[in-house]
Image (cartoon, rainbow, N blue to C red; front, side, top):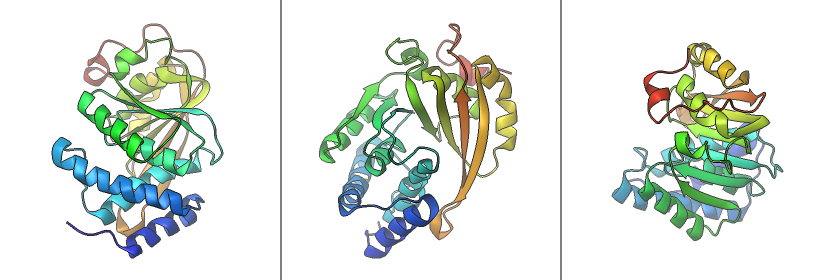
Length: 245
């Protein structure tokens, strides 16, 4: 397994600044350094990610997560929910980058939630918590339904499924951001009926390229226009098996 080098950190800092307008402090870099170590050690027990080389973690995980700062303001104090957070990406990375954000990490596997809670404690992060539950169940809880300014999801499911899982958490006027690959036009078209049913619309797709030839990505931004109809989301498993069309 490769070792973390100053060149990797320098490339990450430069990428954050040039691509996304973020200037990182030494404290933030120290938190990313520790987070990278926790990801590698935690992955040995929990199979959190297939990406285990430090250079790839910085490019494909941390820098990719930083792309959200092009949509979410650096001084934003809003509430953000990261659905299917897994290893904490993008949620933990965003909290490091945008410390004023109030962040909730949600995952359906209790072991991953315990890992996320340990990361939060080790990095001494404030204003962030990890909760256990399926999106289809949690979004019917009045404490979460129509409550968040921002909701994010990365590498979780097809967009037509994702919008049913994620939009019920977004408050009217808030936004859901799906982190996707380079060519999303077909996915967006296929999800248009689901967005309409959930009282939302796609307001833009923002493409970007990661450093070091790590690939091209897209952010799909959906604005919530009204409160979620009571019938959504449907029972667990239905949105994935039979997306709205």
